[in-house]
Image (cartoon, rainbow, N blue to C red; front, side):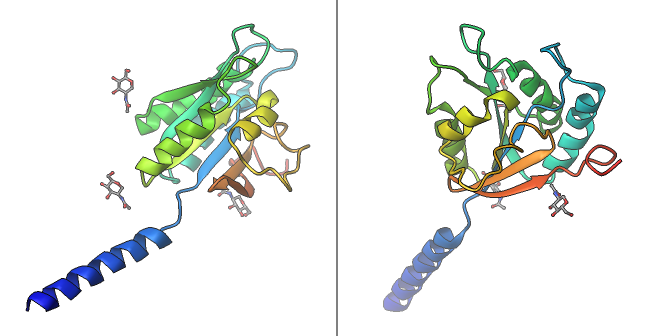
Length: 188
Ligand SMILES: *[C@@H]1O[C@H](CO)[C@@H](O)[C@H](O)[C@H]1NC(C)=O
Ligand SMILES: *[C@@H]1O[C@H](CO)[C@@H](O)[C@H](O)[C@H]1NC(C)=O
Ligand SMILES: *[C@@H]1O[C@H](CO)[C@@H](O)[C@H](O)[C@H]1NC(C)=O
């Protein structure tokens, strides 16, 4: 009996290990700020506002998001100028999910590991996904700092199309898709 219980225990442990080992790492997602007016005029355009208020909450509330990260303007006020609109883009979703928005700095003085460390600390401790909402003009440094392998990424698309979602699993870029916002992302 004791040995039966012992083998059962070993079996359960092995099964638990197998499940833990095969459970896929939760993905995380990267998007940019929604549409903004030209010439650094502040805020979102009407389309950007609609994306932030209607579409992003609808799309991402289906994706089991438990952590939202955005960015802050650097100390010199030279980089990350799109961060206030990135935060604005993320805010309706954060409110819908009852989450706070965590910030990482941009620019020379910023901690390069901030995005990587914060996202991975969350993913490790959770079974939910994370969303990064970043300044569209600072995507190169985001991908570098997030340790995303950007080989094969369409660089011209990056930061120029506000509907783009990058899906990242285990530090590798695994997919690009559109938010498919009704009335915004289809042909006219
Ligand atoms: C959000 O931040 C506030 C203020 O720091 C805190 O009281 C609250 O618990 C936080 N909420 C979540 C979901 O972490
Ligand atoms: C995810 O984790 C929470 C607690 O951290 C738990 O209540 C929930 O059941 C888990 N969900 C799944 C699908 O494992
Ligand atoms: C957007 O539409 C494409 C094509 O139908 C689909 O493959 C993709 O999964 C959709 N994206 C989302 C976020 O649902």
